[in-house]
Length: 424
Ligand SMILES: Cc1ncc(COP(=O)(O)O)c(C=O)c1O
Ligand SMILES: N[C@H](C=O)CCC(=O)O
Image 1 (cartoon, rainbow, N blue to C red):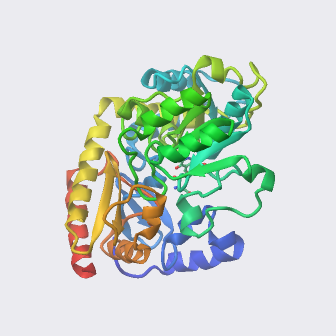
Image 2 (cartoon, rainbow, N blue to C red):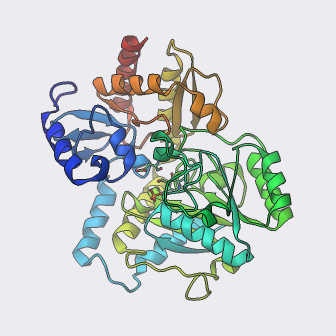
Image 3 (cartoon, protein in one colour):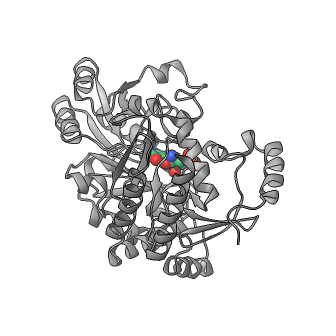
């Protein structure tokens, strides 16, 4: 196994990929790996192993879902058992009730839930549900928040939309754009001004921003949103696709003690398989079909593989003190990064972190855009050289997993030290 060496196989796969996929990939952030993406043949614990037999410590972890690391044995065993029994029925199976109850037992705001197949579907349906429930059309989101790849979300969006310079996608009808209001994250004055002027069905927010790097909410921001939405009759949607079962077992809502009206989930609750979920109080959720008239359906909704993978993952999170352990590892990484000579700031909430060069604080998307992205990219490449895979974009999050144990962390810290010495 090699850290540097040749990447000849990945290079030739990339050539083929460019001829068959737009931009060579099936999700844009993957094309941000320079000079071309490495092709992974195996994920094992905290590591990914490439077609060229290079081995990287993985701090991307599928962009968040793999909080236990790759191919965690207990999850794998349960998935294999389910595969033996079949993997798609188009009729209900017991495991969907088990996962729903498990999620609801950890999140007080969730009395009922609907499983879908991605975070994108979750936020799209949550917004529709909020509109149907309130009989209002407009929504409010925040600059740099990313809620997936549907029309109502691709307005001033973070993540790859920001990385590739298209926070506002082409192809979205004017009528749709007119229904989406945008405020600066952490700016309650902007929120109140809009709520006063417009009939807003819902505010949708990442309770911790994880798609412009990591940006925590300032004290009183989330509670302010809760109060304002109550005052003006709007719903509050927490998009916990990243933070759910990551920053605490009860998500950001438990972490900060704020109950949203609707929660969207994804990533970890599918244990690495495609998933999304919309959850909330009974009287809101019952607006969804077939009990209500807000339509949602899906061939793969609540498919048993995602259900069992998610359920098994949450069981391990409950038993193995996963949030605490992963947060400790993230703290070690953040502390080591913080000793870098170049001016920077490191933002961290528990097991999510990111470094921004050339700025002294990052409190919103505008601050993140001012960070020196070229330096970040240069540092990310230095890390790759020493066998560490950080997100290839300033606007993504560094995640840790249970598999980042003492030995892996020692290797990671040594690698970061080496990368820093070559970087400064
Ligand atoms: C906060 C947030 N919401 C929604 C999404 C969309 O999820 P998916 O990629 O599963 O569609 C993502 C990530 O992609 C996300 O980070
Ligand atoms: N930031 C995105 C989700 O959180 C990254 C995943 C993707 O767009 O492929």
